View 1: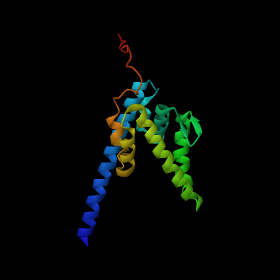
View 2 (view 1 turned 90 degrees about the horizontal axis):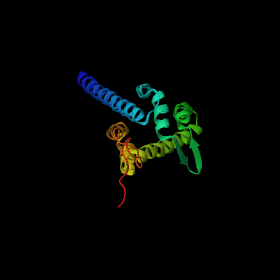
View 3 (view 1 turned 60 degrees about the horizontal axis):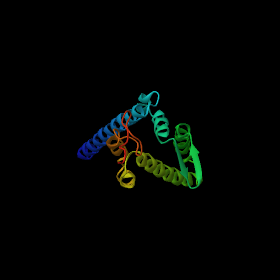
View 4 (view 1 turned 90 degrees about the vertical axis):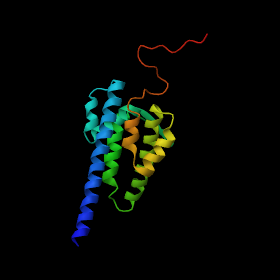
Length: 158
């Protein structure tokens, strides 16, 4: 019986360490991306719920099934926190859960699309393997696609 508790303790410790590592990777990535974009108070990437605000500011706006959402810095915390609370409703909670999962996938795709040409791969692996913080950390030093670094001019055609 004690070996079962020991194994459970090892697994619990392992998942705790993985959770802390993912939290640190996500926070470093959000702070770096926000600082590079000139977002005020990039350290908010370290604070739960405020990190949703930072992610929303990074994406700015997106279309969801024909509806245009702008000012995602405000809407992301409301959608994710509000949705997280409402999933506890009987019957309707299941629909809200599905809607929240779909919005999360679309939001992750849009965020990755801004910073990498491999947005589909990163989004699929983020969903299937829960690697969103890892891929966010990988793209942390990327400039938004389609922008030129400050001070550099695009090459002129001859």
